[in-house]
Figure 1 (cartoon, rainbow, N blue to C red):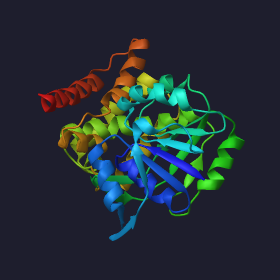
Figure 2: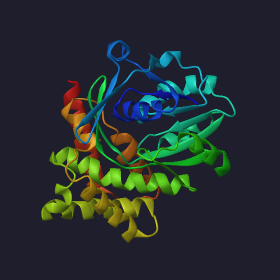
Figure 3: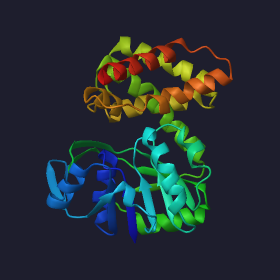
Figure 4: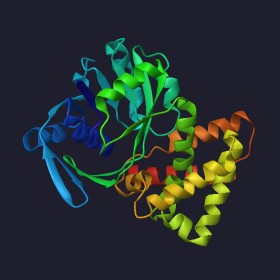
Length: 298
């Protein structure tokens, strides 16, 4: 099976390594430096203290033309607008596009695309060490749901790419799947980014845990989801499972990169505004992260 992966970040490198084992994979990156490093020295993945190496095809994102059977879109959500035109031009029926962005704002962007469209959430922990080294910090699962195509077609795709050490699961309802991940990201990412702590400290420190409960209450009020306790317990479970990890938003700020705050809290603020709901805590953390980004860009 021919698989394309657009994006040379931690998730793109992680997927490139595992899917390359059984398939023909081409990784599409933006940076000339990263492309040259991968072409010259290959890709290294470290897991449980063991480092492994592969060689794979690498091209520039501008060279993607939809020739693969399936393409994973593993860029940050704020890079999607620059890709949509290219994806629309070269997408074809029968060839899957699988979007792995955080948040839910990208749903509007992919509505008009052709072909078989799927969305997913990644529960693995991954840390990009440099342009061709990725650390698999936490073993998880990738959940995929059909955005526009049948469950049968989704199952057929997964039958080809399923791996015991890198599992995929099918979800029937893409909105519920994305919402569950959004709530986790909306609590953990901005709090850890501003407090500059690892995920586990949010529940280990009683004062930080009060902040967790306060921001969760505003999120629940803004999104009006059912099973409030289930969503809250899922946030706690993720904090426990990733206790020693730094959130992606914290790492982005530490490395002076843009964050996905607009895709996460920005989306929730839009929903709150539609319902005329006051969200002072969400607003405060949103502005605090945007302020950090502003300082980094000065």
